[in-house]
Image: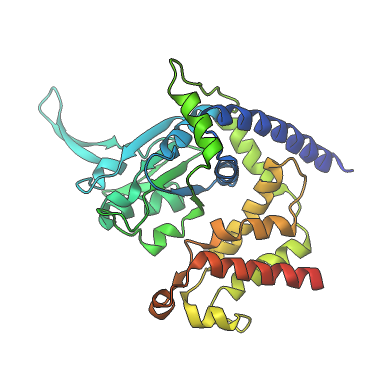
Length: 336
């Protein structure tokens, strides 16, 4: 084993141990949501942003707050409301008068200037305000009055969203949805888990999260993810899955052509390449497998596809469609 390979192996092993410690700490505050926690860690290890979707009261905000503590990141929270303005997120210029009477504009930074931005109930704000995050999420900087300002490193947006059918919500623009590396669906707990939640959260004390990573250690882990080897079978599975999800592609099955209005772009394949590595790291493995691709099909693709009107009228849904695509991709790899 070369020196570089040995160094990477040691980094992966040490990071995996630290991630296990982090998961144990998070589990004290977020009970029974192991998959949600795992996917959130995957998103952070990818250096990306995540959209947590679920009904109110499912500990989405609590999870984001806990992740900020565990990773030692400077965290800001913005409560998205219908009257929120873009300047409330990115900041604005104010006119100041100096002691000598001269006047000049000074930029006052908004809450986006943090390492972890909690965008709470992001779909409560208007599309105009939602779009204020487009540049920040993609380029890690914002532009105000022709001047560019870099955001801190690392920079992550973890947004929570209520189900789109609820009153008082606005759909997120497709361009912004594509900037979230994963959509994480947060479901209701089962009966036993809900019993544990009741006992753990209604007593005199509440479990506290402890810092496990520093921001610098998180960035080192993100570098390790990008350096992890990826086998050819994993690459082919990613390409099969993404291209079959596009209705105009020659490899798309008939049920995709009939139901899907538009499919995932190249950013979905990039998300797969990073997320499969990150998932392997979270689980203590040194390289991803095809199983990682199939397990991540729903969180990577669900917000990057749309059903046509006829498919919605027939009662079809993207969850079932993506499941069929994953089965087909898995079958292709097994046959190969």
